[in-house]
Length: 431
Image (cartoon, one colour):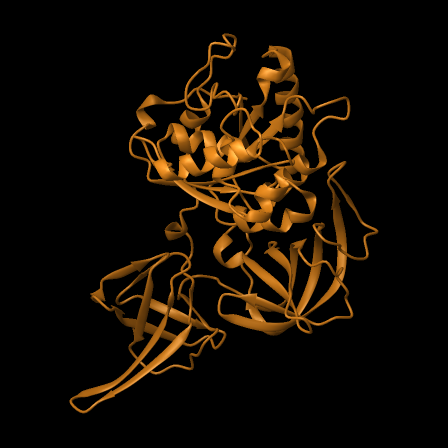
């Protein structure tokens, strides 16, 4: 499962965004704390505060999990509730890490953290893998990672010190996860035995596992490519605001402001407007610092066109040669986030980009059973943290981008029209 790393790839790799996931008490927060401390990503006063908090809790040693468990409720309960984001760097690259909650009722928080991740570190507690195999929450998080298109997964088999660093234990867990990865569709999976508490194989190789010849967890993360190259995907520019300005000595100004979600936009480029289908040429790309020759995904700009077109908030600018499609019917994977179950009789709002459209869930085609990872066709509804495939009808056309092709625009949220509660995160399937 562990492929050799190419030392030639260990140049400055830029920023890697990764999420830690797994079941509660697997040691995610402690692992991140270890990375932060050993990468010198913690200020002295922060470390002193954690040391004092550890003493108040009666801990005999520094509780590194407190570095990420920032909410008072989390520290009191000793669990992670919200997604905690932390930043650290090594000589090779910078990292943004999200610590996802392990409790089942907070699975929806994991979806938020994983939606922008390049990789996932899935922790497995070596002491808790019994005859039934991997824990349900580990399986659920892995299935979500696959649905969200996370291509690289590092499995940190934690607490190996509590099982005597037995090689057979590690290899059994690696085999179990290999089977899980195959079932949910994860392609690139690497395993490393670690002790987050003692630090072995996290940033330095420990002497307790001479049988392990692979890299440390940090070395694996340093070598992973950041695959979500939105600039290489199709052009998608959702219009957020139409800007009008009149000048006595200049022609009327009409610009379309927003953030480029994916692709590259160039001055002089032929573009098409959706949903109207009108065509135009990009006259200029304006920013507060002046005009640009081109803009790439992530930049906020104002676009001027060479002629007046029917274009308003919620519309899209795409490349004229792109076969982008709009439609009022779609199939999607939903991760249900609301405590109230999905009710086909209720009205929902589908929000994609800057467009909001009234939506109805026509049918639940199946629901993922995280225990067996099989799809049950008889599912009639989705409950909190369920993952299922549904058919949706919308009142106004939406952009039909498959999530696998373009995560930026293939994702959407459903909002309960009556309560304004976010009900689900959705990922469009290919039509």
